[in-house]
Image (cartoon, rainbow, N blue to C red; front, side, top):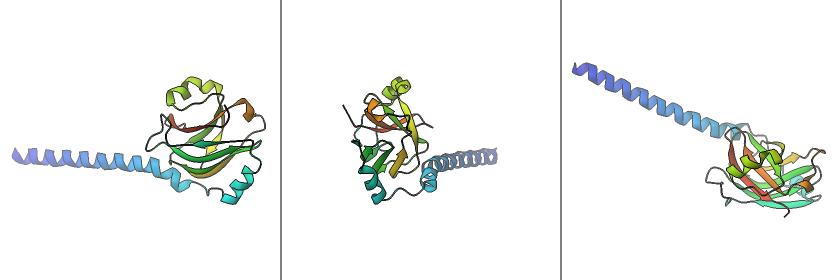
Length: 164
């Protein structure tokens, strides 16, 4: 009987340890895969060229209400007639989207409440510097805030206001 309880205890320990390793590996994969598959970020000179025609500028900061240690952005962005460019860093993650909003948003609850008023501009594939084309159908003067949102997990990353 003692052998059966020792075998059961070992089997239970193996199942638990392997489950923990699987969960950690899965979480690491979700975090690292976007980093490993990200395209090259635009160079400083390309970003500078984009800034030459900027109509608006703003800033992403780490101190937004719903930003935290793993969901944040830090740097300067500019909006011109055909693109939104960003120089700085964003916490890596999957399925990031760039939105324009007619009102300042800095929480997940506000984003969800006002999402119907916003327009999705495009996908963010890099985590340090990006340029997202702005479709000609979008007039940035009708909005005042740029938002980065993780669509896969419904997570607020950061935002920045570019006009009052």
